[in-house]
Image 1 (cartoon, rainbow, N blue to C red):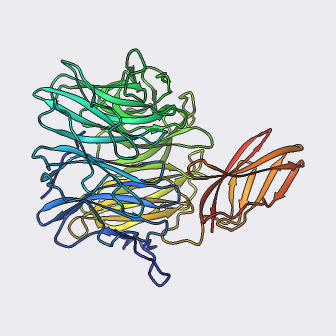
Image 2 (cartoon, rainbow, N blue to C red):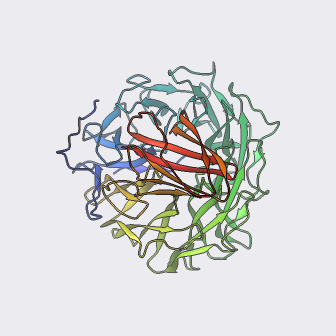
Image 3 (cartoon, rainbow, N blue to C red):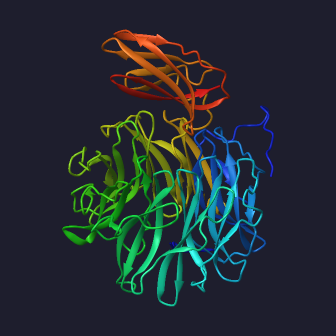
Length: 559
């Protein structure tokens, strides 16, 4: 039996005769890998802008875990060999520890974990292309710290804006614990001559996460631990580092005066402007025995909303943070919460929206999505789509858990008549991961014991459909602009303006490269435009319509 510790190729040619992998039947779901008699566990997911999805997991083979991966296209086809790509078959510990999976700016997967190839638990990193090529060699890159005789654990990955990779991990010697981190350039070379550290003779550090800022700088948020377990005080700090790994701020910036538990592992979401957003579980200000949820924003200069951040509700019920996302069109931060009764035997789902200044927009206690009841709801994620937010959650008890999705608008009101059943199989579901909304659907992956421990996935569109659909929507709308049909080879734009205006229409690829631009004179009212777009490859593109009144951004699938 595995012990999971929560511490910090080739391409198949897919013909039209093959069945699509996404299923519309929630009693089946898409099998990423589930081999009878062996275990597959601890999946992670990383999305690409064109709808492809990397999935990694540990797979038991001949009595030992291997790190494997699969790449699914937007229709759920497996692009690598059916059982998955073996990334590493180096010796593994019988326990599985936290690891990380990200994508770089060229669409490659970066995965960092630990193995025992040297005899100790050491951190290793691999770079895998969409074709399954091992770009950093068959054995990846070994990351070590000479001051840490016990090796390293729980690596995390940051991608800078110039596509360098920063990897941090927990290192230790005796009772001392610190963060080691190293830069790896795109070609697989170390960016610094020596490993860098966040260390102190008395305090312990761990649980690092990253946000890119500037052209090559990065912000590292981490946890400072004071005291011994179970009486450990965990406080979150952040520091900005330059391209050489040198701290820029005179002192680390405290993320919040609120503390977190020893078992809470933060994650942050870069805000696109050099800072990051964050939601976390902490203690309630009126009762230390109850949990509460706070949200915080830190900009590229280390400035936060307030010393504590914003409490997302004011109820004395226990609340746990299980997802947050930022809506690109408004800049608002959305947080989903599990709200429990005093006995913690019943639960419901609430959401809160915060503006750019940290003000609550859905009342002091947020908006109720599902009431507190014995059904026991547990939200995993909230994801902004092109017109609302999809919440993924599970309900039920041991061995009888079901998974659902529900969609709300930007006022927190339901958009679907009923929740959509994502998985109707009674089983235990663990390590639930949700990708980005890209380009017209979410992909959810989880560890499922319906057989004996396997990895399953399911897609759901913004309209609440499972399985393959003919397209993203018949039209895509943003502010006063509309694009249709979608997908299409040549889209039509409908732009409404209140007065005569000059519009600049531009098309960028998903990495921001400008591919097309033209100007159009608009008359007051409705304007119908078919841009003279040059020949482009099939895929996802971003269409921007800029006028004196503002900018509308639309997603277009060229097909």
